[in-house]
Image 1 (cartoon, protein in one colour):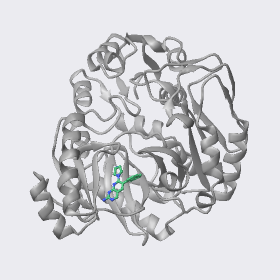
Image 2 (cartoon, helix red, strand yellow; image 1 turned 120 degrees about the vertical axis):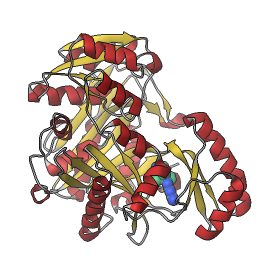
Image 3 (cartoon, rainbow, N blue to C red; image 1 turned 60 degrees about the vertical axis):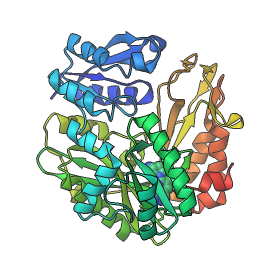
Length: 446
Ligand code: MV4
């Protein structure tokens, strides 16, 4: 096992990883920007190295500075968390060249899954159900129009290197497609440096259901049940649940087995998430595979009793998975709410500032993952997520009641937050009845 591990991240995920390492007897190195001198991860790690100015480009995204810190402190492994360099194949490769283990799949896997058109093609060839669409990239608007005829409108144009809804458009007619293909492609070129596009049939009001998988280097791959992440605002998840209750256990099992087949088909190693779109008839289609640990991983931890960060570290150290599929049991129901420093009255604009008063809930089945404390100043440079509030109950109804109660205890003064907005979601009959699809917020809460 590693003696020392560097965390190339900040905020609650850095703290989460430090905690796992401490329990495992692994010493930790935090890296921090000048804006994070007083941050919790900087204080909690065994060692901390300042890697540069506040701007992420000059600190948390600077591979050389991070690798220098790792070499200087003799860290044997780097956990990238999520965001920042977590899905940067060049970083994973650079870690290897420095003799440092990157906690995640290898660089080639990150690259091949990062290209959504390529991932899609790979999955088609592996017999995984994908949304009807093009197998090969589409070069221009004219070719797109020809292909769309065969698929049937409405269609979606997507960028191969896309993410976060960028470089993605829906078209209901050929005229619309011609126009939107070009804007989506220009957007993709500007945002991702690549204009490779593909087409899919547009699935209306789908659910976003994903499967957590774990795979070791010894050929063992497991699925850890489903998560329903349909409740999103502008491609940002807000509330996540495990397991997904909108599908039958039979469908959930098929989805899990499909996710494992997908992972095996590409020789996947470490933790990963296979994202599916699910339509009204419970038909599911592969959408993307994420190679990082995800923000919402705690809901899976709560229903399986596993520690996914520890599993990632053990897998990266070459250990065998300690359990088999029959040992995985999904028990009860978990819900996560993301509490962000943002102003719902001003288009959810981030709200940095100093937390003047803070009280966070606890109690039976209540978990708080955060990196804030009273007097902490939320810097304006990074993501606005402050706290993940996670609850676990015997069933969805109990989990909903617990979340409602726990949210009611939250006192967070000094910065604006989305807590009242989270209440509106929790109290909405469509959400309570488990009927919220990906269009829930725009349809009912704008
Ligand atoms: C889709 C879709 C409908 N049909 N693809 C959004 C982000 C990116 N990962 C893919 N996304 C979608 N792809 C087809 N063919 C609808 C979405 C979508 C969405 C998906 C999951 C969760 C929230 C969403 C919100 C809007 C659109």
